[in-house]
Amino acid sequence: MKTRKQRRKEKQEEEENIDISQLEDESEIIEKVILKRETGWDEVGFSRPIGGFFYNYILFILGALIVLAIGGTLLPAIVPYPEIFGNQAIVVGYFKLMFLLFDAGLGDALGRFLPEYRIKNPKRAIQYVSFFIWFQMFTGLMQVTIISVFVIIWLPQMTIGHLAWLILIYSTVQYPGML
Image (cartoon, rainbow, N blue to C red; front, side):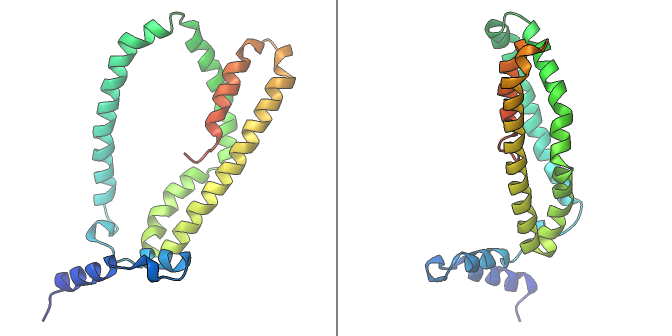
């Protein structure tokens, strides 16, 4: 009699050897990928969040070291006048509220429901991700368009007219907005 572990391994090997050329259309390919047997890592528990934390922590430390090295040597040579950082802070301050309102909390909702439905109902998880991507792309396009029209028509008459190029450049972070 085979153990549970042996049966799982055989089933995984059988499912991994899917010949994609024999499948009729994309929906069958998606079904085969969704129905693929999950490993112990996919089980609900504390192992995933703590593993993700330590993985991101190591990447954060490496990134911080790179930023410290570049920020102390290269940045002062490229940007000799520090007022540009003040102008950047003004632009970022104006956009924070607008970006938050256009997101409508969908980023947090996706972070809440995606891990749950990825295990319980993978089809629904894919639908959530699909909706999130489409919503963010359309609202990002609307934001970039609205900001560009505002900058071209009204901003030159305002006291912050000198920030026009910074505002246009920073507005492009919202398209595509799902990254």
